[in-house]
Length: 294
Image 1 (cartoon, rainbow, N blue to C red):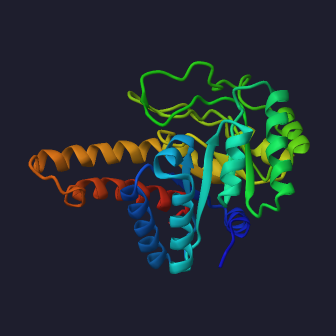
Image 2 (tube, one colour; image 1 turned 90 degrees about the vertical axis):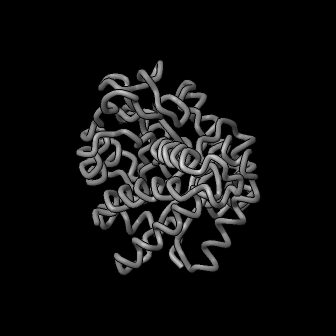
Image 3 (cartoon, rainbow, N blue to C red; image 1 turned 30 degrees about the horizontal axis):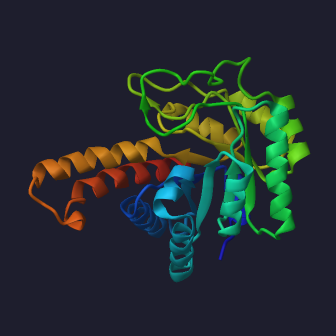
């Protein structure tokens, strides 16, 4: 079966990006997986996906439980579905995800100084090597806000101008001194979706410059709400994985509201999710088709 490093290398060669979808319940996970399988059948090949579980999400779902579910899905279906310990704020919690066998873990110290970010990230990489971890470690450079939600304004302190986004020099220094396997630079992206209007455009040239400087896979966080016309240029410039979360949560809420409205007396949860599943499926299919250039 294809490994995550192999999937990333294949995506880079084909100039496509692996979709990364965050989950908060089993409805989201099952819908994502079933949609991915459907599109894979249409494409004639198994399209890799990464499932993200941030600290809050894995606290809710269970650190070990979600890992076991993903591993079972992968093995029973011979499908390249991988699990990421998304946005982990401390070294200790990164170690938890490593020990639980997650396929990749993100140490998120983007809001700290570069020196503090490097120190924490290096500590996670060193621990991963010490325990013989077979997964990947991702780090971030540049702050893009936090949380997956619909927002009124740009997050305070988010790097969205050319002089505040991740610099080539900082990214090169960070990767060289930490040894991370993947890098998520701030390139105009933000966490969350603006309630009115589009999110900021990406700095495509900066993506290309960073890619050339660091030579490792690049990840685009906060992709919900990014202008559609920016995705393919970003992928062509060097983005190899793209995160979607807020769009899925918004689709979940939209569908659930409709389900409850249509069945106000229904108390069996599994009978309430018709529109919820339909709305989530629309997001997943749309993003997979876009990122895989189908």
